Amino acid sequence: MPAILYFMFYASLGLGTSLTFLSSHWLTAWMGLELTTLAILPLMAQHHHPRASEATTKYLLVQASATGLLLFATILNGWVEMSWSINEMKNPYALTLAMSALALKLGLAPFHLWLPEVMQGLDLLTGLILSTWQKLAPFALLMQISQAMPPALLTILGLSSATLAAWGGLNQTQLRKIMAYSSTAHLGWSVIIIQFSPGLALMALGIYILMTMAAFLTMKDMSSTKISTFSTSWSKSPEKMVAMILILLSLGGLPPMTGFTIKWLILEELTKQDMYTPATLIVMAALISLYFYARLSYFTIISLFPGTSNIKTYWRQKNIKDKLILPIATTAAIFLLPLMPLTLALTYFYN
Image (cartoon, rainbow, N blue to C red; front, top):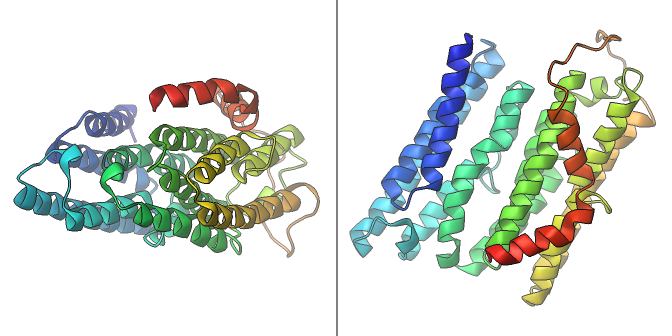
């Protein structure tokens, strides 16, 4: 694909997300969502592989269904409340439909089953964009309507996302599917706290993006998409494998990694709101997620993956031109815990 086309598609992704960020009217927000969807489709199908074509088709159908449902919700709210403003969505039926549409776009449970299948058919760079950048625009809309949503609905949505994603990732051997379930689980933590502290939810999304970026860039650098190939990468680059293990444990929320910071703050806020039962349940779900991250780390450094494989092992590393983004993302994904007082100050300033 020519470089000018890459520039056009990436610019369209940025333009669509920015348009949604700046929107106060549902029509312009809908235009931004459609622009980001149309811009990523050629990037998903660029390899002309049957699995990539299947993933692109599934993604198009899911996003079209979610957009149609969101448009129907805004029309219903405009008909009843005579307003197309995002902040003035008050009709309970329209709010429920809009929440369902945004949950489908974000890949939240129980609308998350499309995400692992689509992620499996993509290359690692496009999977990184789908897991990070494509979450920003729907999450921005979710933040704007979250204060009008019933708190019980957001709590159930967050708990179900964290729990079902943790169970779904247990028996996976494909790294991209594991990252897809990780996306659903981390967004569940953001959704459950968004009603009480939008700034904390935004910080959780930012930390998730940092950790996911570091994980995907490391997997791309090592050319690993399965546990069976990932476990043979230790002899090629032990330093990167150690960093990858720390990134995985940070995704699982193990202290003193960066991922532990946001889970700690969210649990503290939930206890302040006297939500002891949801806090206990989401911690149990986090323990299940930590198990399959620890399992992946075990297969990486302690033992080889069970079973024989005829894969070709590459003993010579590729020449990576950009050597700056990966160490920055890795450092941020592991060692941001000492900066927690600064992040807390910024969060309270936002609130």
